[in-house]
Amino acid sequence: MAEGLQQLVLDTLDAESTIQDTRSLVIPGQSEPAASQDAQLIILGALNSLLSRDMVKFETHEIVSYALTADGSQSALNGSHEARVWSALPTKGQGAPVTVVQLKKQVGDKTVDVGQGRAFKNGWIGKEGDGLVKLASTIKDVTQLDLLEIQSSGTLKAREKDLADLRRRKLILQRKGQWFTVHKGSEFSTSTAKPETDLTVDMLTSGAWKTSTYKKYNFEAEGAPTSGGSLHPLLKVREEIRNIFLEMGFAEMPTASFVESGFWCFDALFVPQQHPARDLQDTFYISDPPHALHPEPEYYKRVSTVHEHGGFGSMGYRAPWSHEETSKLLLRTHTTASSAHMLYKLAAKCRGEAVEDDDRPGAPKGRQNDDGFRAAKLFSIDRVFRNETTDATHLAEFHQVEGVVADRGLTLADLIGFMRVFFSKMGIKQVRFKPAYNPYTEPSLEIFAFHPMLDKWVEVGNSGMFRPEMLEPMGFPKDVRVHGWGLSLERPTMIRYGINNIRTLMGHKTSIEGIENSPAPML
Ligand SMILES: N[C@@H](Cc1ccccc1)C(=O)O
Image 1 (cartoon, rainbow, N blue to C red):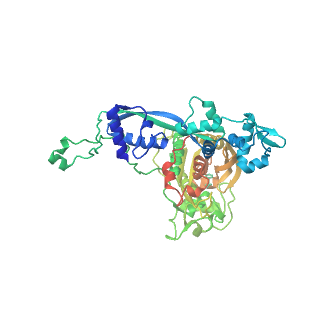
Image 2 (spheres, protein in one colour):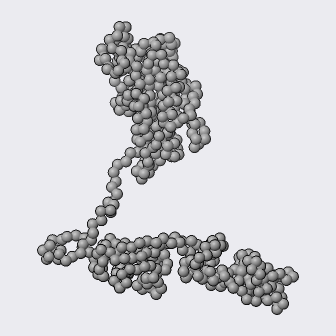
Image 3 (cartoon, helix red, strand yellow):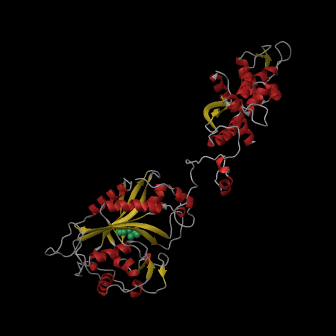
């Protein structure tokens, strides 16, 4: 049929040079002109195909048309509700008046409910005793006439108001539609022979290429979508947070070692060896190799002593030290293990080790009484592991955002002030702090942010000033203060992307399509 229709369009153009209104075409195989929108869509298909070969040009005309609802079609056929009410009643004085109950039985509840009032208003019917009678002997059912006109032409000529009324009565529906005016194109011909799409060896040898018509190359056509890699939302938010750190002058810590020893993950941080976080139920331990390499002996001695007996102003835990516990290998439970490595390295010169002076601007070089301390601002964003039962908000593997700032004279006010700036750069303007406990920081603060969508305060991080029991065995001078904090990467990502089940963000339930379609976050 498609070809027959294209041929019809070309033949009509050949005879009449333009087709003013495609609604006048009679599609091959049909008896009526193509007044309906369905017919116009079929015509549009044929026109587009001819347009691609430049055989025609056409203009589109947008129209609004109307179609009858089921109720409307019934009224077009049998008369409006009010006319059906009128015709069911006896003429005044010529029969017993009909009660509403009887009338409903005769013409149906809906017809009476809708039609009765209108029939009264039109003066067609009246009351007599308990019943109703006809007052008018003949009526003109304008509603039915209007519906019939709409049925055949799609509209009412110049009577917008009545259309609105019929729509309100749910007798008609509005439809958007279009029709077309068609002209000859630059390659117009009455032949619909398919143009060639490829130049073949056969055409070249036979010489057919000279007389063939060719399909025009479509430079507008979009290629098939390519599937490349796309960044996971966690990576996008990680990048955004990394940029905040970099813009605040932080350097990134190396965090490649997922496996740590009990020493670096806990002991160096003054986490007691009996702490519940070190239990098998909370931490994944590695069985092979069975032991970690031994840390530097003097540092190890200072750490074990401060745990067992105290020192640096502390009374220690006064519990027996277990070498076994410290040398266990485990999947790190927090990135503070990496911070401990970095802080130990930062204090190297303070311990009197030969370290090359760095050339950061402002770093005191070879100053007299230089104790070797260099201020530092460090961050990391990487994966940690906890032996957790997974649920909508917990995973056994997740990511931590961690930062440490080391300098002389830092106070708790600096930590709080810094947190406010850091979180406001992440788009979190309202933050609150609550005293908390960490074995390695004192004071410690939990950080809460106001979540406007949830309309409540949610915990976003944990922070504090590292204890002398941790810093001084590393070799930091007494007046050096280090504050640190940690937060999850998943939580801000879930908030940003409106995800409420963490398992759809990470793990085997993640939807690849969701990742491909997730927009970059906005600050
Ligand atoms: N390690 C802590 C975060 C933290 C880091 C540094 C200082 C204080 C707290 C956690 O896992 O929650």
